[in-house]
Length: 243
Image 1 (cartoon, rainbow, N blue to C red):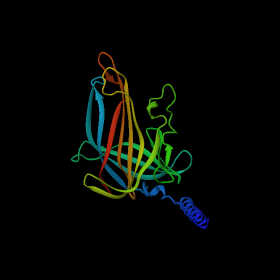
Image 2: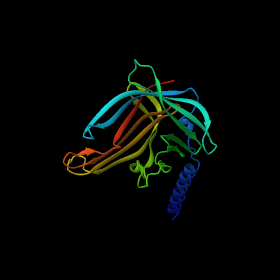
Image 3: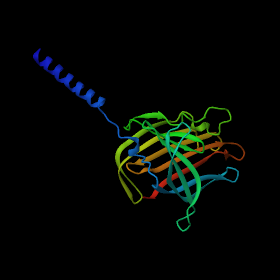
Image 4: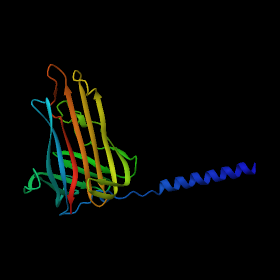
């Protein structure tokens, strides 16, 4: 009897300890993985997948882009925000040319990035493996005429938080991965059947920001001459430089 009581007491102590550890977990702030500071930039190799010849041929075109945090501003909700300018060039021998402007907001509980009038929730507290959220919940993915219905119900999930990572010749000691989507509908290997592929992955490094991104959406329509529908495309960003 005494042995049973001792075992029960020991088990309760372990459970209490585990509960206390879980309750006292303190997440790193969002700014750890996406610091916003005017003048900071990250450059990427951009591999762009496009479908040409009326959607019958897939090609990959490679460029370079640079995201520069340009200025602190205020968003339409009155929150502090930052203007991000993207610069573009075909290769390293060309001068940078601005080609797009975005906005980033860190409201302390989630990090939002506004691109082409689409508001994505890129990061969210708490930062730990398994945390998940609907990253595209601000986007109209349900209207009949929405051009981005393929973004509906994407469930973002943290994975590999705190792990070291090497990308090409660059090494990062503390990173995280956000798995956004990995969906295959139908059989893409069968040219006689409809298929759709949706992939979304992003990786971030502490003290720096996004270091890798892969997005791919394709919608294949079968028929006499099968083709990929308008709106099918892919992008892959791989960090090559930063300050």
